[in-house]
Length: 150
Image 1 (tube, one colour):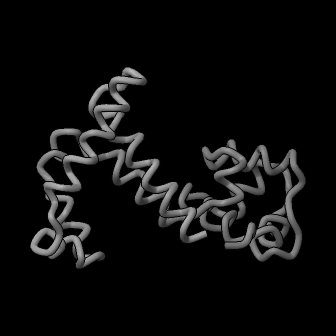
Image 2: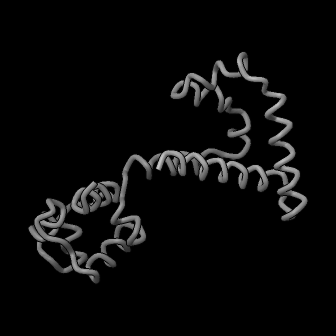
């Protein structure tokens, strides 16, 4: 996504018109339009003011992804109790069908025992509780995955 697209989507998500943004920043509506069309770019001072106006960090503004923002908000809105009620395997298997079938093919107990050993090691060596040890292990698996797919 281009900077102009990011600016456009951040403005729209904030519910502001080009005129309103221009007025807040002391520039013309045409200037806002040129930024959003990637004809010109705002300077760093204007970018900081835009990020404050849109309630985003500069990094978020530059990389603004409306879909990602909506997903993050949806996740934040789900309570801990509701998350426990969700069958995550069923949800994710819609996107990744292997999650619905692997349990009939893979000796889960063998791998579960090995993973439990790793969790126990993380808890013992670093003092992590069960949840944090699990999150660390999940992150390590993600790093391995990203390393193989880089």
